[in-house]
Image (cartoon, rainbow, N blue to C red):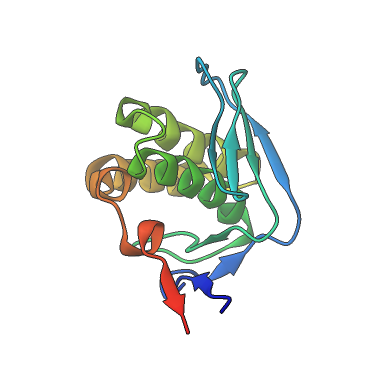
Length: 141
């Protein structure tokens, strides 16, 4: 009998409809990859593949277009940290990238500053505590 493996996506609001690449300054000894969803190369190229699901901007905020790309990159890097594929010491870099990308996309400096300090102060567990949806695979039938 053939079985399928699947997982619940209760926590996610958005799904990437085409591959997205972003050059970071992170340098690694080897590529890290989560199945066919995220890859971070030794040269720092972050590739997030079509089909990746993320929850978008979190906390007391509004999901706006100038927040989406930053939240995508930030969530992918945090997921690599939660899964221990990337050192949590890079959390500050991920937080700064969020602010930088939001500014590049037209977010005003005050809101970008607020976003940055909220993740700096309140998002540590999002980078360190594994989520059930990161690891739990359900078998059926």
